Amino acid sequence: MSESIDFELVHDGFGTENKNAVLLFHGLTGSPFEMKKYGDFLFKNGYDVFCYSFPGHGERINEIESVTWQDWCNFAQEKYNGLRNNYNQFFVSGLCLGAAMSIYLAEHNNNLTGVVALSTTLFLDGFCIPWTISLLPFALSTITKFYYTFPEDDCFGVKNERTRKSLAKITAKANISMDNYPLNCVDGLLKLSKNVRKNLKNVTCPVLCIHSKYDNLSSPKSAKVVLEGISSKVKQYVELNDSYHMVLYDNEKEFVMNTVKEFLSKLITVENEKEAVCI
Image (cartoon, rainbow, N blue to C red; front, side, top):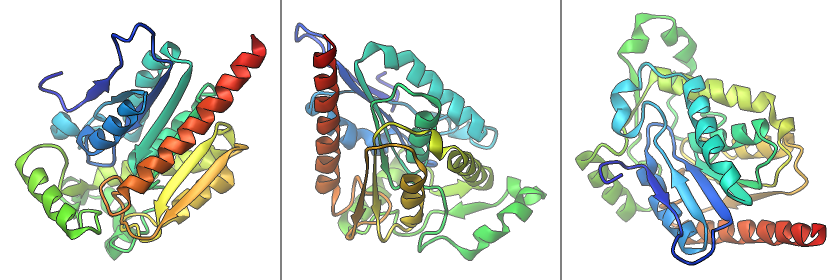
């Protein structure tokens, strides 16, 4: 995978097979690049980690005008199917679109150990969303959909100014993300979100939602709708106060990752205890 921004971080050479894994999903118009530090953190804490570009993203940006939200779902399910049976404990986690997709997989698979949803985007109601989003249904029914895109806001989803400047430079130099949101891509996210909201009751596995109070793209409403609608007995909400949308790169990134680590560790302990009782 030397020429790919997809990544697979797999423990080997230790004499025993790793029993725990996490499948990560990146955000809308983003790529696995934005999940790399998170993936490295999880890998160092004992998990095999996998992350791949959604159709129309990463190196396949030229396809973004032709893919649908169903293409994203089929892609995620295919990756899940190929990995799940190799591990005892298997988690999915994502940011933005990736968080919505993680919930989607939990709705359609009853053998997930847990979900970590970061900056879940079921509604585009953050403080930087332009009022023109209300014109989306009209725009999609006209030729406008082939020409107009919603621009990325100046903050790049990051409150920390130093990090914001670094991300802006990196993005400008490499095809790791887009600096705008094509109309059909936004429409795909909203259709996926609508589908996810309809099926929340099907989620029974543990879920952790981490969301910033000041998310520029999607307010905490999205995370709260998820936790109110799912059937899971174990569910946790953590609200941040010093970050924007890109919580894995902002002022509270260490707190976010350590919170995830603690949540996953507790679930693994519970599952291991269940397995011991059954032996």
